[in-house]
Length: 110
Image (tube, rainbow, N blue to C red; front, top):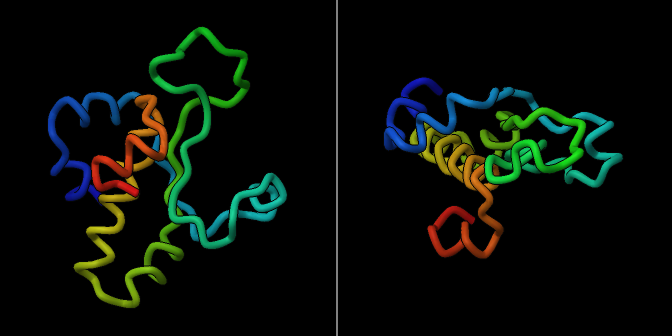
């Protein structure tokens, strides 16, 4: 994971340092009850960077990576796993920075 983080461009690395990244196996039952699919690879929750201080979101901004799901998606290939961790982290960081799914797709992070 640290290799993945260190490979980010400095502008993104600065933003990533502003929020916690949690590593979980899979979405827990509470997240699934809230509509998060059991095979989700990553999740951004909380207030996006562009909206800090302007919303009433009770959750602190954070990224959650679901490593067991990412490993399953990589089908045991370590290189694919590492790339998927990086892509998922960038995808969720994009949400923190205010990008929607279309924006992320245009950047190859869908």
